[in-house]
Image 1 (cartoon, protein in one colour):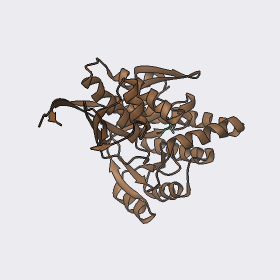
Image 2 (tube, helix red, strand yellow):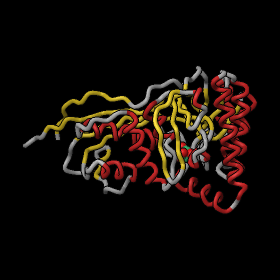
Image 3 (cartoon, protein in one colour):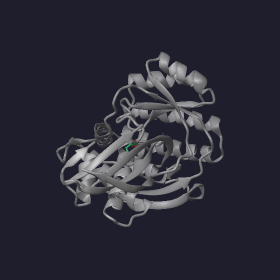
Length: 322
Ligand code: MEV
């Protein structure tokens, strides 16, 4: 049998959660995201077909993958994805997929690239796939650690700037103190594109939404200051306030509210994270065991995450056969 050897290229990216500022960041307001110790790993090699985890797929079966492949003039490839991040859980699985896939493609094609190139190309893919997006998720998955968008300049180290439709996002790396967070997954898949669209319609129809978005931006700036001073108690209170504003914006749900309220007894603060409507909430706590227990008792799926995690990284290629 005639066997062809193809080199395979692997890259992995961390998931993330949004500490403060989701949705408002889509309109150029500030946000903070932290990379977490759960990763998605993507391996790619040349192929005459398009396969994902060994299964043949039509090019638009997965819009993120299709968009990234076509932006790099590829129609076929053998892609394998291993993930510790549930899609739709609000923990950056699409950001981790876009950034690790792009990194492995660039290596396969021998194209030079840096983190800024990956973050900005992945942002384009997310923007197109979702209809609207901010660069916070893809920047956090690419650079790791902590990312602040449109923060006061003294709080972080400048990384890059994205602009779209009159909105500008200056993206900074920020130092992250050691903190414990519990994630509570509702078990409900969060559909980012439709929730982002719902907020857009609300904003077009009502000045109330505009005010809520401004207020989320203000609370997030206060949260950035609290984070920089390591003031956990104040940060927690601001997270809870952020949750209430997001609920007023219409992006929470009964299950998220239940898990947030239950966690507050043992936490500095708690809020939904990511697009909402399902997905996950986070609690800032030094009693993670008790928070996990209460989340389970209230129908959620808890786990503890740690921060200060590296961004997209690569593994060297080796030979496979097909
Ligand atoms: C999703 O993780 C965060 C949103 O703010 C959308 C975005 O920033 O692209 C809801």
